[in-house]
Image 1: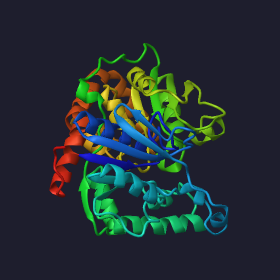
Image 2 (image 1 turned 180 degrees about the vertical axis):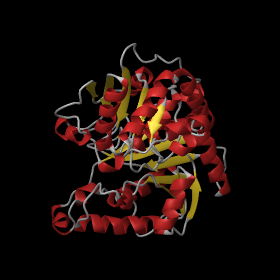
Image 3 (image 1 turned 120 degrees about the vertical axis):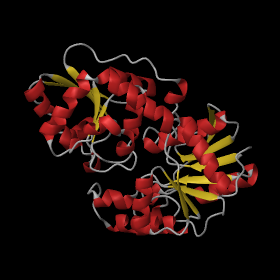
Length: 387
């Protein structure tokens, strides 16, 4: 089959979301489909200086400059966030005759500007602007209210919708009452398909905890400092490795930008490669993930895939990943002492916990599992599972 994906960025190419969850998903699904013998194109916004098309590991990526019209900006602030994706996608479709066109939701900036959608369109809903507003990540301005209306319309007119968990699908149905058919295809990554890698393991001495993401209220990074303080006080010195694209002036969102608690050593890693990220997971005693809300939680799966225990709140994919004996690592992010006490046994039992988590990822969240699930859904929608 021939696919076109519309998204805000692609890893190694361009776009504000190239290195985030949406960019990672686009890389995994397109490379997985390409490996299975299908053809994939991706349309993203970018500077597109000179070269508007390039191939990355068999995936053809098209760059489209972001639209900006000064007159429209007066009446529609932030119009620079919208580009003519419908027009460009139609032109690409006329030349390549795609079987399916999947649009990645971009928190209000997606398909709401189009009057109607081709029947073969799929809307993949990652996170929503409504959820960001609910968790006080963005203030409610006139522009946000307009984008919320566009988001509601996008989900209302989409003929087919994909999301990554039954929990998230239920939230979307309750909030938006979509008319299109909604199906669940979980995210997946390629590591489990290659077998569980030998873990490097944390260095001897102080426990080493890794934190991944950007400082916003929804991600709960203001909870990190109290937990580290409690751990150092109750269990001894520790190291915290914070992997974030946040600029230095934004680091105060972690509560660790100016001062750090006694007994805690903090290291910042910015702009690292995927291999470096995986190595940091492997070197860690555990991943510390205390989000207030998470639609999926890709760092949880990435860390678990390489055998690193995860200490997390009950959000996103966490209840599915941490089932059975490791349920005790689902914590209350507003109880720092209890979180610190959960980190201690994770350090002692790291090898056994990591092997169990890696097995769950191999079985349920591999790239191959995601691709197979998508092809099965497309077959139910009338598309062939063969090229």
